[in-house]
Structures are given as C-alpha cells and as structure tokens.
Length: 321
Image 1 (cartoon, rainbow, N blue to C red):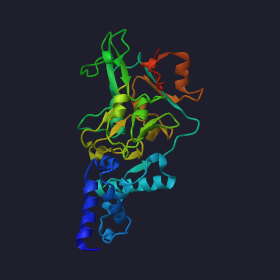
Image 2 (cartoon, rainbow, N blue to C red):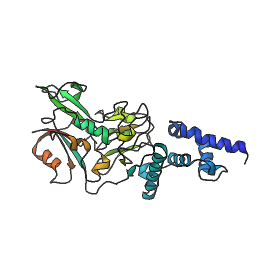
Image 3 (cartoon, helix red, strand yellow):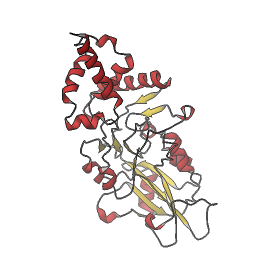
C-alpha cells in the first residue's frame, strides 16, 4: 500500500477522534466509509497500524464499543480497563471504575422530609464532590427551593437564595431525578442511551448519548443536566472511585443526572446527599424490604409525590413528621 494511502487512513482516525460530534455524525451515516477503512487499520489489517499510539488505538476501540446493555461481562471488563488506562495516559490519574450490577431483591426509593430540611445545602455540596460535577458551570443535580407556606410546587419557590437559613415562615424542598418507574425520559431517547435498571435507577450510557436533549424536554421534574462545555474538575478533587453508569468524568455535549450515587448504593452505602444531610431530612432504602426506613416512612408518614397525576410513578416521596 502506498505511503499516501497510509497517510489518508491515519488522518481519518485523527479526524474522527478529535471531532466531539463524530459519533452523532457516524450514526447519521456520513462517516461510514471512513469507519470501515479505519476499523481495519485499528485491527491491524492495514499497514501502518502498528505506528498508531497506544492512546489512539485505545480511543478507537472505545469509539466502536457496544451500548453498555449489550456488552458481555468480559467486554465490560475490557472497556473499564481501557478507560482506566486512558485516564492514566492523559491525566496521570489512577481510577477505579466499577460495573457492579443491580442487587437482586432491591428496588431503591427515596424520601424527603420537608418539615426537617433547613436549606443548608450540605447535600448539594456532597453531591458535587461525589459525582465529579462541573465546577466551571456549577452543575448541580440537586436543587433546594425556599418555599412559601401552603405551596408544594417548586416552580413557585426560590431556587437561588443567598442568605442565612432557615428563614422564619419558610420551608425547604429539594428536587433531583426522581427515578420514575415509567420514566418519560427513557422513551424519548432516540439512541437508547438511557434506561431504567432492575433496581429502579435510571441511568445514562454517556458514550451513546448524542446530546439531542429529548430526554431533558420529556422530564417533567427538571432532573436532567446538559454539558454545554467540557466539564472542569480540579485533578486533586476528582473522585476516583467511579461506576461506568455513574460518576465517571463526562465529556462535552452529554446529558447527565442523579443516579442515586450508583457507585455507592450498589455497594451497600447511602447516597452522598443522604449521608451529608445534617438534619436527617433525607431517607433512602430498599422498597422491597419491609424493615427498611423508607418503607416505615411510606407506611407511617403523610406522603405525597410531585405531579403524581402524570402517571410517571416516581420513586421519590415528600413527607412531613
């Protein structure tokens, strides 16, 4: 094969890997011819493949990996190994990326006590740190609203208060992804990049998300966030204990959301927000366990769910003492 042909093959790889929207373009069919040639290059079928850098070869394999739900356990292991190696090459970071599956007999549920929350925002800070959220854009999965007595719709509250709390004659109400049993966001996704796991957690495969934001438009609870720019997290603040479907570092142009701290909860720990709450306003547990705290709340407290008339069946309840 001529040297000019080898240069063309290599340039195809470089163009695709450097183009942040390449997967979306590929899905439209515009890159199909280039993909066939370059896939052969990555597989070693074309002279010159051996000259590709380790980073390029790893990234190319990442580009052609399957949707997470279609991967075998071995393919998941290989994918995680590639991501950990890429992080070491690019940022000199040693990550621990897990693929823990749902635990049998578990369906997660969440309770928020509006009579206890005092608006301290410790939950928000803990979530940002745990889930590697973009510091530059101040991305937050959790929002706390300062509410007027008698109002129960956060849209009527103040979500940007900057004063000492709590305020007399006000109460506080938190929102995040509610992990609906009949989640409209999952039905809206054209690439099947988001779905509900057997334990009730609604997840996103960031590498299959094309950033169309249909899921964001479909969500009636404002639970989704979009990365308009490359997220920035200081290296010394990166949480290196991650889950593939959770708090791993996300690229630009992707949807993200609360995952009930999947990297923690599938290991038997509480979500970071629950653990950080200083007033005990947040309750989390297994809805299928009759002895769990969340079941006690549902059976003994006055509970309600936001916009229940929509039939989304959110697994997030508000309650009062």
